[in-house]
Image (cartoon, rainbow, N blue to C red; front, side):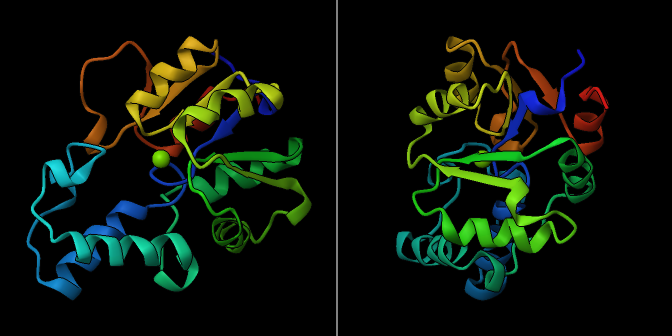
Length: 189
Ligand SMILES: [Mg+2]
């Protein structure tokens, strides 16, 4: 499979942003929990880990509203691949976050070598809105970490590429990548 740079777009949390790793770190260091990243075996994490709802809401609120100040890091290799991709035109991120600006700021903060006018971010608020937004942009391949979203994309003739995470390791028919160099290898540079 060789993907044209203009045909691929990306989810943010769990693909570019290492959001849930920081969630686990904050729960452990600031609230005394002892679960590990690999224990998050469901996207709906409260089904598989014991955490006080108020605590998880407080951590998540910080990660959603203040991603830069919270210290969310990029996944290894993401900045390099995305910066290279920007030489071929604008890069599109489609997130199910409700608020666009905090994560746009974080993306710009990460992609310092990319002109801001080459960074497009759509916040769809729901997972279900992603396919229609992607189709408007003519996107044919989308990298996401949520398995249910991959099924949804597939139904709308967008080829999902699942970014491996502890919460998506179940049998499924989709392409899987475990790191950004594997995404890079799929692109027709
Ligand atoms: Mg995600």
